[in-house]
Length: 213
Image 1 (cartoon, helix red, strand yellow):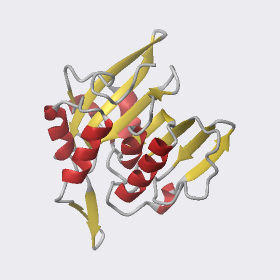
Image 2 (cartoon, helix red, strand yellow):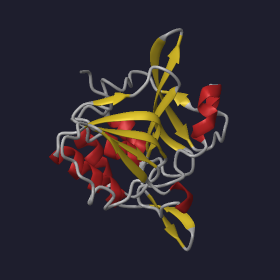
Image 3 (cartoon, one colour):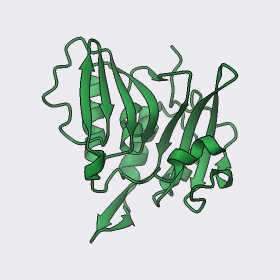
Image 4 (cartoon, one colour):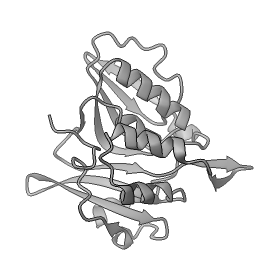
């Protein structure tokens, strides 16, 4: 799966409960009824932003952030009934924030869209370690997907916290059509995504990740 090689190595690079990467600092812009989010998801990002008339929030290549940041986005998105869209990569905290959208969709029929969910980790003296209390995060994922996320997929997300591990919902264009696949990467595959397991019966619409308009 060569089209995945560009992103799978950084699935867990910016964790839900880890420290933000300075080079990936978030950037928010507004264009009429849309807000565009790039970079890390951080608490307080939306605090000073005028949301009057905003109908959608577009996540463009956001590699993660913090759990507190994701909760901040979720509260704002839900309070304002905002739709969410992904263009490119949306990993970790970004994926959690995306799930709060009233309607959730991919933004283009071209290229590859990847939405990756994994468990939390923290940095202890600069070393990534597993965050032990996963119940709040897993409950939040279950809630945001309307209880549609299958228990076996939730379990794969729960145990994925190491570098390059997680459940990845992929949308890609082929012969003019958009195709979907869901992968589980255990973190040992590195850049060789052919070693990731394709999950059967894990359609992103049926699992509550994307919604049909």
